[in-house]
Image (cartoon, rainbow, N blue to C red; front, side, top):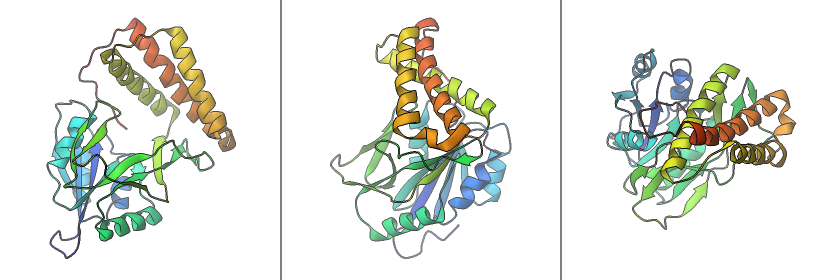
Length: 266
């Protein structure tokens, strides 16, 4: 990794991991342009940490899982750079986006930068789908980011809530569902956490509510966001997301979920 004492603003890229041995190298190599790379691991039982260390990342293990927000806050405590970019282990930064990130850091502007994804599902890049709504905040001035809050769809809390937000033009590659079996496991994990979040908010579940949520989300992804242009892989991707929406309300009704130590991967 580069020397953090070099002139100019510096960048840390932080990654949360759990049993990511099959893809952490690809992720880390795309982040190698950063001055500091930090991996916060949740107790991997595979070679994730070893691979990350071999590739020059600083690795810290926190296996007392308390949610994504807490892991990000633990990551923040290790940052030794002017800017921090949050990257997931199933994501890859293309070179064009890396150049945009470097330019944003060099500008020293006090803004938040958000990214959009191209989903990579079952071996195909779903680049004919429309952008996700809203994008996701990923690049911050370190002195502006106070903490994260939330269990699964965590959000950033800024020192100045009126900080301007800008979008990167190039998209991140998100290898979210590489196999059908892995996609089913991820669906179950996220349905569980989504049910917990709704239970805490006092919502009620049920089959009909789940069907309504699943149908509306499938229509939104497959038709409105043009998943149908991405062939069978686009259909599978949209179907798994819709099933996650259905099962979170089924879990909410029949399992009566409580917040616990469910470990999940991105």
